[in-house]
Amino acid sequence: MEAKDIPGFFAKPEEIDAEKYIYLDYYFECIGEPEAAAAHLCSEQSTAQWKRVGIDEDFREEFGAKVLELKVIKELDEISCPVKNVFDGKTYACKAKIAHPHNNFGPRIPNLLSAVCGEGTFFSPGIPIIKLLDIHFPKSYLNQFEGPKFGIEGLREILNVYDRPIFFGVIKPNIGLPPEPFSEIGYQSWLGGLDIAKDDEMLADTSWSPTPIRSKLLGAAREKAERETGVPKIYLANITDEVDRIIELHDIAVENGANALMLNAMPVGLSAVRMLRKHTKVPLIAHFPFTASFSRMQHYGIHSQVITKLQRLAGFDSIIMPGFGNRMMTPEDEVLQNIKACYEDMGHIKRVLPVPGGSDSAVTLKNVYEKVGSTDFGFVPGRGVFGHPMGPKAGAASIRQAWEAISSATPIETYAETHEELKAAIHAFSKRK
Image (cartoon, rainbow, N blue to C red; front, side, top):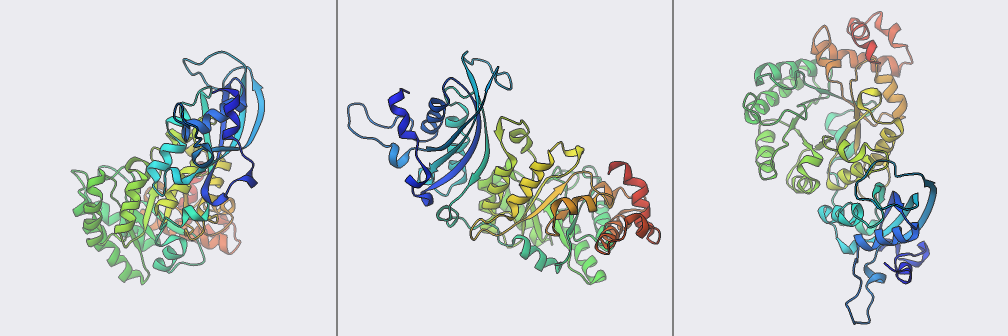
């Protein structure tokens, strides 16, 4: 790209119609002049060749992505991680805000990702290192999506829970148990006070625990627990599979009593989520396999908050995400950014329930609550319920007792003096705090 071509890919915010663009925040490291690198980035992900040879025309104004802001952070001695086949030259770390005309790809998530995270971004000349940090949608774009059917408020209405976190539990052992004992320990956890008992993200339609049998037994166990406790419960069935089986597994699980469904969002693809959202009448919950492979490196890939926003756009009602603490290897500020992405204004797109998780128990509940800053979250222990020394009923009870202590401003150690389930949880799980 010659210097004379660069201005066609730059604009001031007031020079463009904001409703016609999505906005993208990138970090990148470039070899050579940052202005040329940023112009290449816009060109490659939008018009590329922007006119025909010998014809007086210019597609950049209508179809070209535009650099709105470019900040050179510093000159680098070398790029932050080794990349082969990179030319030598002065190296710069930069941040850029880019406006991309959404008419280029329309309300189609695969096409959106192809534009902003595809060849034009990760193979842009002079930019070996790049990360999409954030994405922002105008109302004109959001209005073309349905979003979640239920969201936070809908889940609370189903469960009749309005004044506390929603308590999930991952039935353990997650792999190996046949459906009969699996359903029994799920039943026990509901009796103890869980709102939602769920399949693990690894447990699908397996030979030892087929979805038709497992969902039938768990559906019956859920209904039995509802009758005995007098409060609503949810069985969250994992139907992650090949895309052409998702609707079939949905219909089987729902008919058998699963009243919410989980998908591993990135492995099945967000387009599959939109398909299921149009079909289903029960809440959809996302799980995070494959996300870290895009997001973990500080300066390369896609920030997980982008993926959170896209999952919300696709129609999930709740998003399970890596939570606080060393276990999930996710910086605290990133967890908080993902939680914020579940709540922030997205026009008519409903707020969704964030579920930050990872080795939680009654001991960690207060810490999660304080970091989230509200009761609008899901709390999702696995071993903290199903590895409780007194069994899953007691494990679930310990979570509810921990919340009773928190809501009454009583130290959990004090509350545990008269609540044996919480006392046993503190003894068993304090080392994981």
